Length: 130
Image 1 (tube, helix red, strand yellow):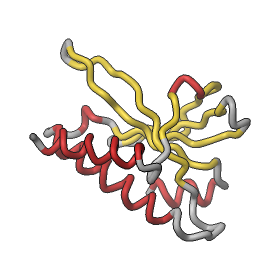
Image 2 (cartoon, rainbow, N blue to C red; image 1 turned 135 degrees about the vertical axis):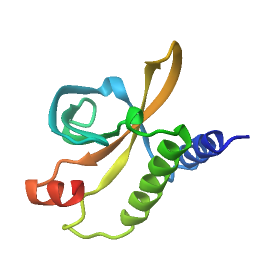
Image 3 (tube, one colour; image 1 turned 180 degrees about the horizontal axis):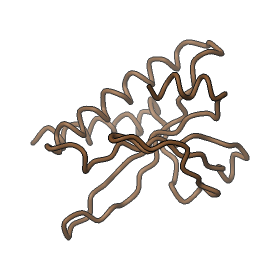
Image 4 (cartoon, rainbow, N blue to C red; image 1 turned 180 degrees about the vertical axis):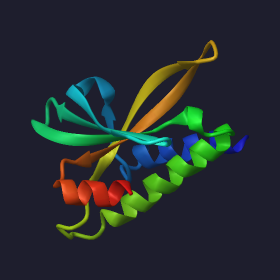
C-alpha cells in the first residue's frame, strides 16, 4: 500500500470514528474566493442545512510535485486542526470538518478534500492563512 493510500485510509477511519466530520460539498452555496495563494484557495460559503457561513480551504494539488507530499500535508493539517479543536478558545478558528469532491486530473478521477472552518473575523482568518 503506497503512502497516499495509507493517508486516505487514515482520513476515512477518522471520519468513521467521528474524529473528523465530513460534509457534502453540494451543501455549500454562494461560494466566493477570499484569497488565492500558490498552495491554497480560501473561499467563503454558506452551508445549507446548518444555516451558517463558513470558510473553505483547499490545498492545490497541482502545486505539489509528488502526490504523496500533497497527502502528507493534508493529513498533517487535519490532525493538527482536530487537536486544536480540543481547546475552547475564542482566538482559535474552529475546524468544522472536511468536504470531499471529485476533480478530473489527467483523464482519471482524483479525490480532493477541502477543510471547513467557522467564519471568523478577518484578523483570525488572515493569522491562520499566513
